[in-house]
Image (cartoon, rainbow, N blue to C red; front, side):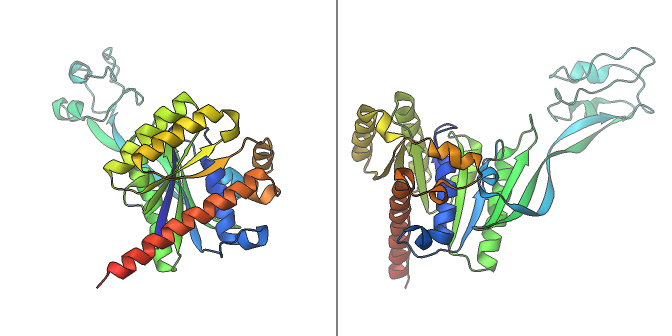
Length: 314
């Protein structure tokens, strides 16, 4: 079982468009002029802060599970004597000074969960409670099972929730002998990206032919190289700025990284997303044909790695 993660330096580069197309091609590719045989794949949307793969794959929700994040301080008004010590020790100004005889109250948004007030409260009127930070879901799609999540606004621990989504996808893949996990990763290079990418077999980096795109690509390659993840590059909207494409290709040659696709700009991508369909299923156009070629190249690299690992196993 292999794991493919699709990453981008920022949101809006086309990462989810590529992930949805791969989900479709893995399941139904030969019926859409794709030469790659069907591959049983589990899908995972690891962009828990702004998940949107489900918008394109039209899933049917099968399970929903709560995800708990950090703890916040809770004050028992019956025990609080309005001494104000909690206000003094709170470094985050989360507890306004109480006006006797009213009990102190905690601002849940400002509370950082450090628990200093708990240890300093003379009447022991404060305790910590875990917050419900979001949910993760198991759903079914026309292209295979999908694991995705929704982190509540302002909540932390997105890296932990990404790990949860990946773990559930991996367990199902192992239990039911799936061949591949396709992970739609979060943008950027922060903790959620590290949680989504660590331990995967291949990363496909989706970029754009702009100065910002080249800069973000460099940061992504530094991240994948640091964690020992082989990477391929795909340039989206490549026909809009040929000079930018040349710059990115030159940079990738210097780093020994293959550019496996040049996806043209096409408003059919937007139309397909509005209809809730992968662009490869929308219609046979230049974007769909190029994505088929990129998918074939990605599968080829994964197969080469699989054969290499099999040959090196005593």
